[in-house]
Image (cartoon, rainbow, N blue to C red; front, side, top):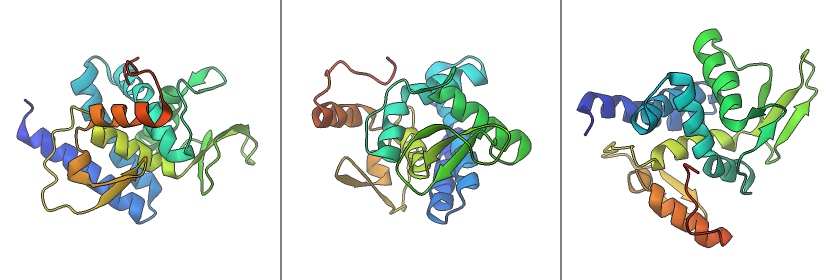
Length: 194
């Protein structure tokens, strides 16, 4: 069991991330969900910040990418970096230390995922749909280490044609795995920590 104040901080980060996402403040949503993921990754994996966050992001990549692209991606690579490393370095670290996203990542209105696109900066960028942000929020919410109450919070989220209140998605990792396995006819032994 974790201290109540830590669960309160986690819930506040997830709520603020959802609110910022709904308001179109995507940098704030990403910053807030990075804070929540750090708390959850510490509970799940322990160890140093970078390693545990990349592990969490890689583990929940299929869920986040499903939100973003409506397709199932596992172990996505752009060049020599995987999904977790890209999100950790170009989103979390850039926002925490520079208060802006890295020039190596951009979020677009579409649903396509593209790597190495020339966007006018000196380096080519990886383009992700903005819905990936909601996928990251959802990943934190369903993580079985998410023990928040979400009382009197009425926002709904739809995943694989299942619409539930935020409170009902909380900690539902096993349910989501079962739903994904059935939907995609995947091996029932599939796990996020593969």
